[in-house]
Amino acid sequence: MSGKVTELETLLVPVVEALGYTCWGIEYLSQGKHTLLRVYIDHPDGVSVDACAAVSRQASAVLDVEDPISGDYTLEVSSPGMDRPLFTLQQYADCAGEQAKIRLRTPYEGRRNFQGVIRGVEGDEVILQVDEHEYLLPIDSIDKGNIIPRY
Image (tube, rainbow, N blue to C red; front, top):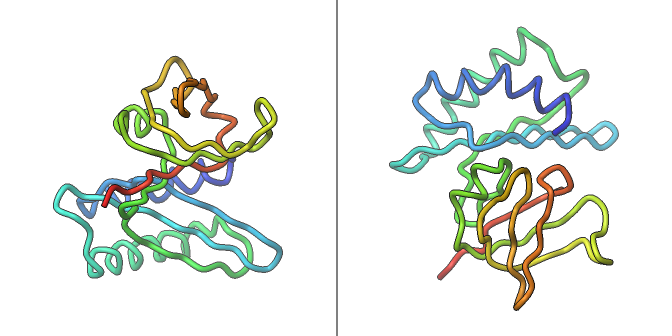
């Protein structure tokens, strides 16, 4: 996890929780002049547009005061949705039995993209079953992981 994401979590998780939501995760994407800060919030009863707006207002106020991002950026607050991104080992453990897509930062056994069933976690690794093979993927090597929704 990058230092910037850790810094943003320190600022924003208390804001989200004070409003009664769980901070599911934070994405910080900086590409030249275009910076995107995406905050995913969750709640057992779901997340409404009004909830996203309330968190956005409070988060914006904190970000304006603390100024952790230099230059212009776009703040998005949303629900993780059905194809929810996974950020932590605990989230992978909680989603055991679900289908997921995982992209690694660097190739493992010649590939970066995996799709299979999350079997759980072991230490700091995610156990992903792809067909008849189980892969142990270190959480630090995962660039992106998402649940594949069941319809």
